[in-house]
Amino acid sequence: MLSKLWKAILFVGIALVFTGAFLWSSLKEGLGDFTRVLYFHVPVAWITVVFFFMAAYYSYRYLRTKDILFDAYAKISNELGILFAIMATITGSIWAKVIWHSFWNWDPRETSIFILLLIYGAYFSLRSAIEQEDRRARLAAVYSLLAFVTVPFFIFIVPRIYFSLHPDPVINPQGKINLDVKQRIIFFSSLFFQTILFLWIFIVRKTQVKLQMYLREYKETKLLEEK
Image (cartoon, rainbow, N blue to C red; front, side, top):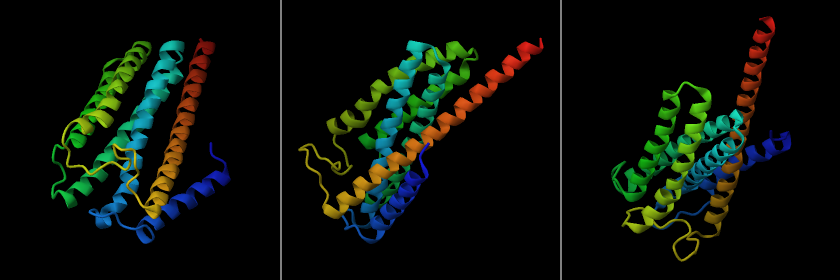
């Protein structure tokens, strides 16, 4: 868990990012006021990839150790990954409505994130269809690993293969950052503090699940002792 000092730093940092995004940062040419969406859309898209990676990592750990806690951590990671994928879709759609005059255009980036939502949505359908805990955890872990293989393809490769209405990424194909100094400060500060915030949320959920499992084991042990 984060210390009180880190919580204070996190709170102040996020407050400064919001203030700077609306009152201090310059506007990007061609985007105008909607430059501010960039400071929140890109970080949540980045965090989506982080959580899907973490889900794959914990799935691998489960397959190696058969520790059911790792299955629970993988499930939490995929839950948060889907949540932030939806947030990335919503913030992207807000931008699209203003720039393209439509919330949805089946642009390669929009289509890619939609397919990823379907893939990871199927992960939870798979889990809900299997009652036996060990079998559910094993199949879910294998599926999560296979699902993550598609993430780099749909997030980084497909949008660059096909023509897209989406503007150049923050770091363009030439490796240059298309932001001025003020924009870079706000963007990277937002990326840092949002990543810390959402990893903190993940740690809180991990602790919650761990306590629930310990409580379940305790109750099962008490029932066996009573018999």
